[in-house]
Amino acid sequence: MTHPAGHDLDQLLAAWAQAHRLTDSDAERIRQAIVPDDLALPATWWSDLNSKVSQTIARATAMPAPAVAGWL
Image 1 (cartoon, rainbow, N blue to C red):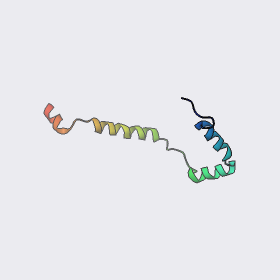
Image 2 (image 1 turned 90 degrees about the vertical axis):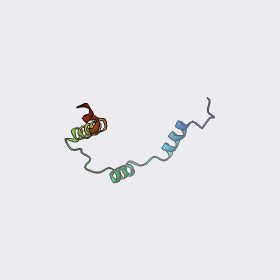
Image 3 (image 1 turned 45 degrees about the vertical axis):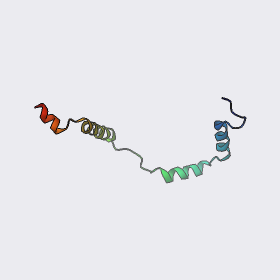
Image 4 (image 1 turned 135 degrees about the horizontal axis):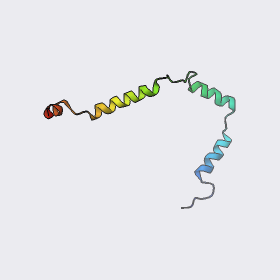
């Protein structure tokens, strides 16, 4: 499929971005307003996440008590 000249989305976005470029100081001011200064994760974040995921999987796949009783 062909596109009419001047209607390529990538070209349109690139032209828009070039015309609307923020200054470095404006970009930094916006970034600081959005991103907290203390962005560090706790040392245990990965193990905490894995623990929560594992618990969720275990609950979702656990055999219900009545079914377990039927096996005994």
